[in-house]
Image (cartoon, rainbow, N blue to C red; front, side, top):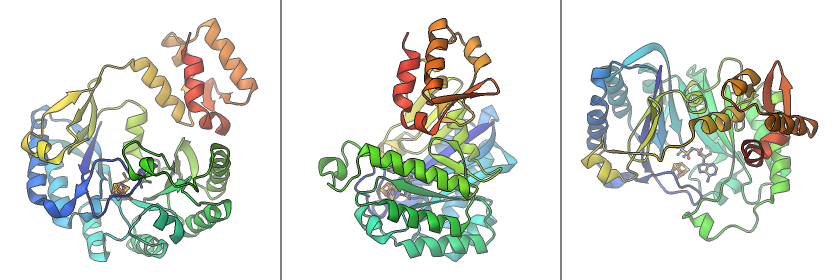
Length: 363
Ligand SMILES: C[S@@+](CC[C@H](N)C(=O)[O-])C[C@H]1O[C@@H](n2cnc3c(N)ncnc32)[C@H](O)[C@@H]1O
Ligand code: SF4
């Protein structure tokens, strides 16, 4: 079944590290934007596609009011066949919604909340230019739990300038207390074109320290029942992100809104990363340069803890004597491990993922 991604390209304030496409909410009429998405979705109506995940990402989807979200969910229902038990996720900036909006979201079928917490230390949140405090994050997550949301995810960052082992442990101890179902652990990336790129804070940790933080965080998360299933993602039983799994397993998904990407019937394409241009012509997209789909499958599969099946590697003609030799070498160096005829990266391997892929893939 298909996944639907809806990009909400509005933020209250641009964070200095972020290069996701977003703009100020004040300048736009949200209903006109939603009309553009509705027009875009309508081109798929005749195909009668079955959908089982909707993901509102951003930008800041939680800035929309409940009526906007409801219109978008109804649009999915009108243009696709929405499975009854679909996963419906919304990304939330912690200080952008209140109890009544959460109740409305629940009522209209949103069943997964993804909070952009980043850290439970106010000094780190300040450094990241976030507009919320640690306590505001705790309060809104507790409120969501009280309202019986049973699939709550939070985003945490490592490598924040000034972050220490002690401050990371503090963040993880709050994660433990909150007893949430899913966590994404991202390493702060210094993205070209952002204020952090042009003026990188000097207190950023080096690669060795970040590797140490990553390994320590993975261990802690495992000990509190958040099992790693992908390089950056951890979940309690049955709570893996169904939508994001589509990205890593080459399933079909359609993206709506400026800058959103799609993978449909073996073709990758994306919408123009400009809100005005998208609103003028929402169904205009650009096909991404064709990539080697076999290579993509290999890279994406290695991101997952379940890894790749040796039989599948053989079927796809990866398994040459040279490839087998390299696999044995990586196994000896504890970069990969083989279990039940499956090859997966170890934690050390995950940190070296890019080099491992290049090493294995080059003849
Ligand atoms: C694009 S944001 C959208 C959600 C929401 N606006 C927020 O900021 O909480 C999704 C997540 O991407 C992550 N992210 C954004 N820029 C990043 C960067 N440069 N490096 C690492 N993670 C980043 C953050 O953890 C954030 O929670
Ligand atoms: S990190 Fe989130 S809130 Fe900050 S600019 Fe990016 S999308 Fe907006």
